[in-house]
Image (cartoon, rainbow, N blue to C red; front, side):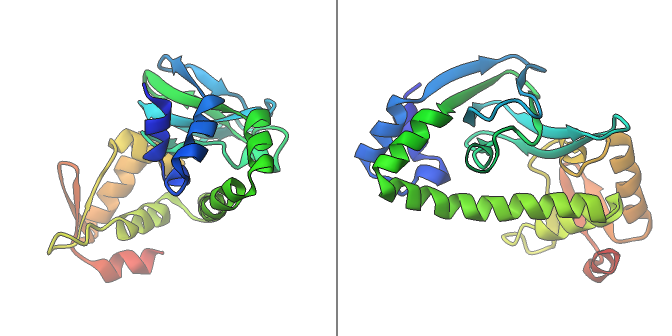
Length: 221
């Protein structure tokens, strides 16, 4: 795989010059992980970050009762743990491959050395990183302050396909993965979907969630 060409397609590096991309690619490497392999554990030293090139990985935490909360499911082109290398000495969560995965590995020390030598890279990177961090913090707050019906209703409303005349949320992931990303289990998600359908708020056809009552969903949030 051509790392430089791949990085160009990643939003974080899209504004970099060819020379800047070449510099970052020079310290990057490719790693392969099998399904269920751990990329890093919570509290491991944050010595690198990753970009998913193929497959999917999940970032999760386990509470004191042993309950797993999936914070995010990352797919192709998405970054994993880029915030941790700047703000944390340890990873604040764990990461596991949901399927066989190929990732671009960027070591912390070499990457920081590069942006210290080339401040323009730092400015471009930090602009995108700031937006991502705000989204991540908000997601954690939502998981801790709302129940599954609220999170599901919010997800549906935020992901309505505006290109379609009727209000439809087309799932970009399996219902199992959606349950992970909403911090629950598939059985609980199924019950929540069934409850919304029974209330007349939605209908379900394949990977599409047809919104029949937008105000009804808004009232749940």
